[in-house]
Image (cartoon, rainbow, N blue to C red; front, side, top):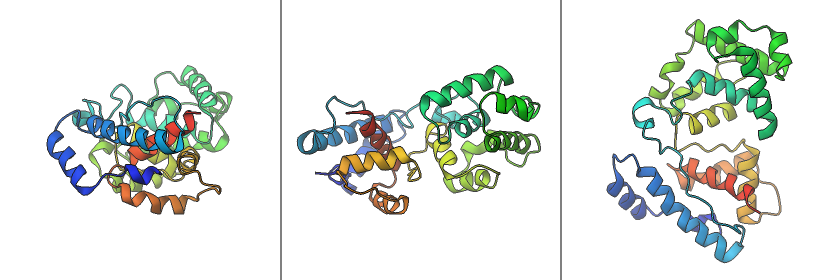
Length: 239
């Protein structure tokens, strides 16, 4: 049995949405329902999960309904800078560089980042390309090329267009920003290696799946592909 066995029917989605419409717990309940089906499918047939997973909490913050963010203590600008630093790095390495960066920068604001020298950014551990990217973000904010404070008011496509027009900002960075900062629930980050490896593990694939192929596989899970991605990551975490 594969993850396909966990996909919702149209009737199930309708019932869940009707019961929880306009509720701050809407997607917590929906993802709890999802995780129960997911755990049953995996534990019975594939035995991938040797311990129970928690339900996905993507998009469940009460503040997200009002402020457009699941992380109200961090600005959209700071979140994007964090995503850039994390690109293609292991979690521990990214955390170390972020800590060094904050020591050099102080409060992560466009003004403070723009005032940093390239040598400071490189000294904190950023590559030349990442240093250029974060300074480009700061310039875009200060010159109002992008209104970062209103990104949560845009739809997904508008966010993509606004941010990927900036140097060094690609789909992966925007995907992570929309999932973890904006709490968007239909993001399908096929460019993320962890999501692909998790999908392969769940399905016991013998060959690596390509981003394009995984993109097509995700169509059946619209409009909650972020939750599927979350469980793909969890599959990697569990032995």
